[in-house]
Image 1 (cartoon, rainbow, N blue to C red):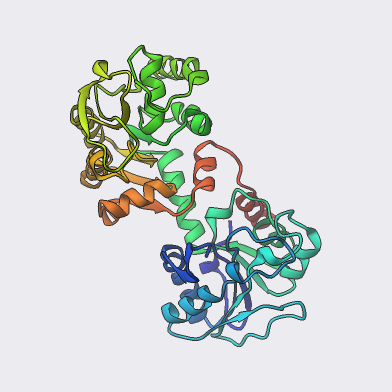
Image 2 (cartoon, rainbow, N blue to C red):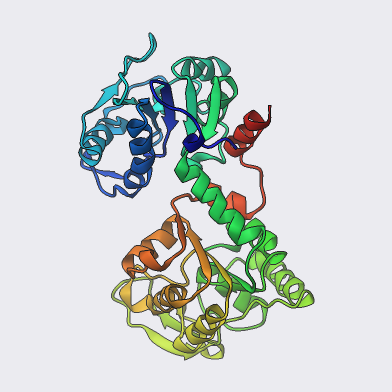
Amino acid sequence: MLSMESLALANQRVLIREDFNVPLKNGAIADDTRLRAGVPTLRKALAAGARVIVMSHLGRPKEGVFDTANSLAPVATALSALLGQSVRLVADWSAGVDCAPGECVLLENVRFQIGEEQDDEELARRLAALCDIYVNDAFATAHRAQASTHGVAKFAPVACAGPLMKAEIDALKQALQAPKRPVVAIVGGSKVSTKLEVLEALLGKVDQLIVGGGIANTFMKAVGLPIGKSLCEEDMLDTARRIIAQAKARGAEVPIPQDVVCGKAFSEHTPAVTKAAGAVEADDLIMDIGPKTAQIFADLLKSAGTIVWNGPLGVFEFDQFGAGTQALAEAIAASAAFSIAGGGDTLAAIAKYGIGAHVSYISTAGGAFLEYLEGKELPAVAILETRAHG
């Protein structure tokens, strides 16, 4: 891919696609992580004298209908503060965008435009007409072929990757294509079915595959351990057994929890009781791994060369069931391995346990991060590669 930093931007109309899909609460931004992640890209373009036009989606509004609740107005205000200069929100850009060198303007929510999610060619051409250079800096949306992420890149005079997009792909390549071994992957979450492709794709690349959360319950039941009334996918038991056997066949391992932390109800008030994995009672809910298992997992991470983390190991939102995820987070932080972590719940755990500075790369992407791990082609990345070579 061409990179934004390799191009002369002075006086150029530079259209930058960011992912500023931030959570709003009562009209205010509840978490500005995504804004802060994109700001260095905007600063670089502004410092180079570009005419900076930014676009993003927010929420899931109905196409063609303006909706105050999904307006990017709060984002324009926040960006103005972060950049230290006024960022104008442009609602109607049909006749073009007036933007001076060193100025930054923000287009209103691209999902208000008819055809955005269908990757409509006419909309893509209208977006391309706004710029001399198109920059995709929104890796989190790279798995979607939409007008603002894919179509516009076909028709813009020049199409390139922004620094954030490039950093994300470089980190994923480092973790998956030529990783320092041993490679340990941690995959948590509630269901095997939603992570099955990730588990199977990682199986061919990793030396250890740690499963956590509800996924671990299914694996425990698959090897004959009692799980009480815990979340489990009965139709995935054979799949879990197959994954364990495949791992064994190539000298890898899927370690099964030896102890667990249970509660009688899914509640922040239910007492936490640690038990051996074979001692789970019929009315128990497994909510976390136990301390013995946490230590085994932590020891695996100590000797790792590369760590890929997606998903917590328990119901860490309830403090009494967070010890397993915390122990894992701290082991990652203490490890000398190259570590990459991604997915919404994973980011929340990293924030809760304060280890952000000790993870080599934190991905703000959810679906795109998972699809890259699965080995799928990401349309918004593929089109940038095509443009760079053609």
